Image 1 (cartoon, one colour):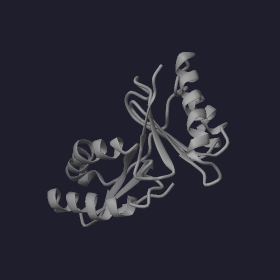
Image 2: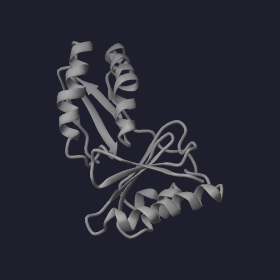
Image 3: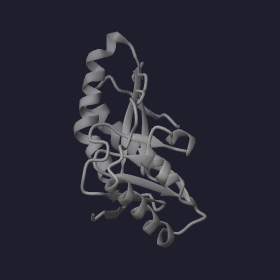
Image 4: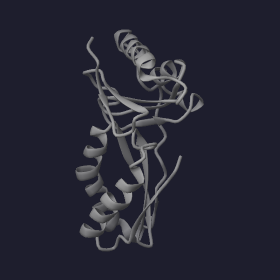
Length: 185
């Protein structure tokens, strides 16, 4: 099994591509070992010294390291854990993942549909290429609430991406949008 590794804009994060589906549809973001209980793969990665966050995407795994370890030491261990997991044929997630509850007024359904369409077609592919994802949390009174995940959650440029990239695009295409706020984990 060959696993490709890519850097991300976040120097503490690497993206691992095992050449097969990881989540298929959806994503899962684990900020701690306790949060990783539904995922055998995430648990195995958190068992490695220096793993600070695990993000599972459609066809990739993003791992964020702590400052206490260097990638030269951790990278081979992460590759081994991912390879061992897939070779053994274990599931990535056990059970159903809980969906985030959205804060949306029923009167704003058309605006929310436009926002989600733009996020799915223009934003999500770009952040996925950097090892992350973006989750819609709500829309009220002109304010869109989004959460950055994976490599994007701790990236130094994530707030600029939200404010200058995503907010400007949404305001351009959806005039009802006034601003974008980040939901922190």
